[in-house]
Image (cartoon, rainbow, N blue to C red; front, side, top):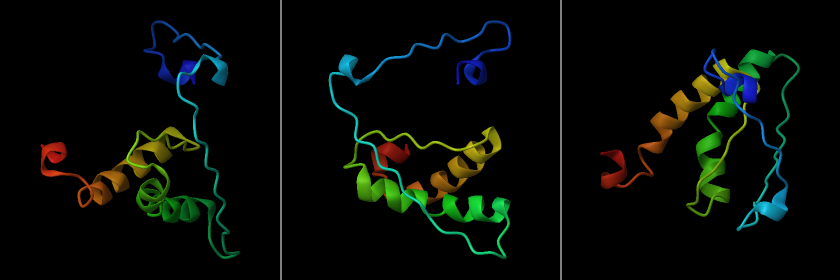
Length: 96
């Protein structure tokens, strides 16, 4: 992650901390979804992007949420879908 976040000139610093250093305990949710035999990995990843908004609504309690994706391109695709899906759950102030 530190390498991925680096600016190309300097490496980002990776600090490993466990939950003892957190003022508020993290809530972790891991979900699994089956894929069909005739579905490619690429197509499966795309279908998961359309589930993210409802999953965030279900588990976030309106608090900040981290979503992990396998690749940088996957992050961009997921974010693109989330931006479209998020419009209906945002307040007018948040949209501005």
